Picture (tube, rainbow, N blue to C red):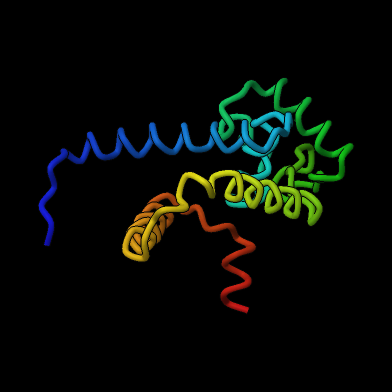
Length: 154
């Protein structure tokens, strides 16, 4: 078994820095100008399910008025829709549409394709290490979407 040369804090710091940079590089290479807030919002709804505007704003780290405008635009583009909150008839929940899910999946595919050249030289063992790391991260932070889980159990 290999010994760790970095502290857990250093490893997590490196993971955070690298993943943020990787996402920025991929987004820039796609040439698309869609706001990251759009993808973040669709991702949150896909992973966490329907949320109220305030909950969605907190999860996305934006103000409630900003999220209200964003949701309005996403609804006009038919990427999200509003549903009545059964717990509070005065409130609405925001949910992702099939079109929104498809757009998010397409975006993620474009990001992955844009990064291919950075990883062309990896061997099978390195791919296995990345796959294992990705599985560890997903298990810890719950990045599996509800749709993915439904597909696995269906």
